[in-house]
Amino acid sequence: EAGVAQSPRYKIIEKRQSVAFWCNPISGHATLYWYQQILGQGPKLLIQFQNNGVVDDSQLPKDRFSAERLKGVDSTLKIQPAKLEDSAVYLCASSSITGVSNTEAFFGQGTRLTVV
Amino acid sequence: AQTVTQSQPEMSVQEAETVTLSCTYDTSESDYYLFWYKQPPSRQMILVIRQEAYKQQNATENRFSVNFQKAAKSFSLKISDSQLGDAAMYFCAYRSIMDMRFGAGTRLTVKP
Image (cartoon, helix red, strand yellow):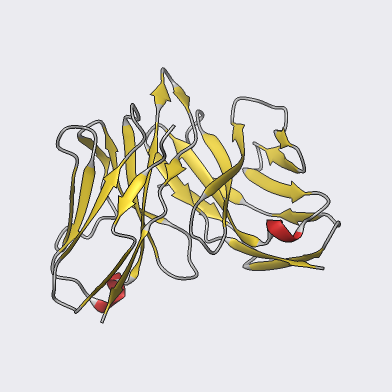
């Protein structure tokens, strides 16, 4: 089965510019996550979708970050305007939920963002 | 919010030896899963092993096993017969229906 696809792999922008990341989860996976991973740290959950609804966005800096998953499949994460501290790897993951059972999340290769 | 704590930023092990990575978590939920993920320099997160909270039996996957102590909220990973390819960042993760959180990670070095 195809894995989680993310693009672009790398992005360099100047501060105050905007940027968007794209994620295509594994087919049929209802749950989609966006994580921010700063160098040397663990992934920090930004937002979790269940189909096209938001389950948790408590750690998303909503003044500059936005995310959507309009048709319950692909998702985009946008930063506008970017700050230097947004430099990180942005990971997308997806998982399926069957009844009350949870499965592991499958990750994409991430997008490395550098803000200069 | 649930928290996951990995108290060992770095660990090293001699090739063919055994190493244990520690993880503790905090939750008030009863239905959850715990995972260990490996992240090599390529950044791809790879699942190593998982444990369902309702199962008392510790999970095992080849050279990888866990020691799950539910009452203590502890979930350690044991790697036996360590290999050079095991060198990576290891992340402990907690997942419930509402949430999936990671620890800060442990960098494992394997010495030949």
